[in-house]
Image 1 (cartoon, rainbow, N blue to C red):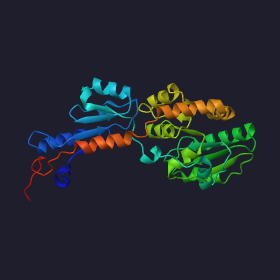
Image 2: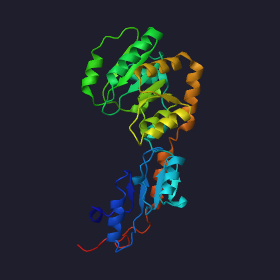
Image 3: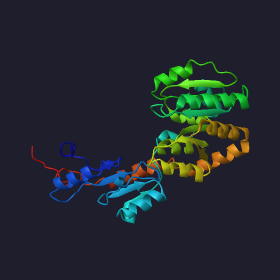
Image 4: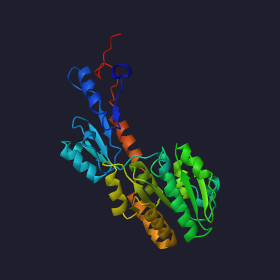
Length: 297
């Protein structure tokens, strides 16, 4: 593959894909690798050691914890760059006003909005959690709040929730949605798993984050990022999750403090800085022979 497409730089964004291009490019170059190889670590803090290959030219990490682990695996400080976790550029743009976004999404323009995200596959006890949150919102704020449930690709859960009759709370049920940035910018609180991308996307929108679960071990550190960062909380219990979110909505000053802390943790421009650095690493002389590729047909 490398021989046929002749890349000028290789960027690895998975823990298991760095070693192969490094080895093959060295082989193609007669024992010397002439093509830059870059790793962009897409885990936040709890990072698998397989991410770190000390033979790469540059490794982009998102946190001090990840940088420390990289150094312990033999990477030199001059190989490491830390800008933050790369997320989609849409999360770095100034969003439309909340009321305008809510109308676009079919929501009430002024009622406080809770966003419940089940992930791309909509797994993780989403139906039970949605029931609990909706019922508590109806009890604590009769007719005064709304909930959007994003079920991802789980059509079974989506159809079940969509068929329910909700009382004293507005509930909108969605499947797989785009753009997620609009849904986050329209909301006041998000309930989600501790995926690194979702956590930092929410932070970029100033959203307080209620974490409902995480995938061990790599997502465990994301819980600490949210809790110690002061912009959210964690529980696996639907009743605790629901009560916590309702308490936030009942206290506008607390909600504002959580939102401010989320914005402090955000690094929405990281993707641009990483992309620029990668472009700057592309060799000036890009003819096949100088890069170590065979020129014979």
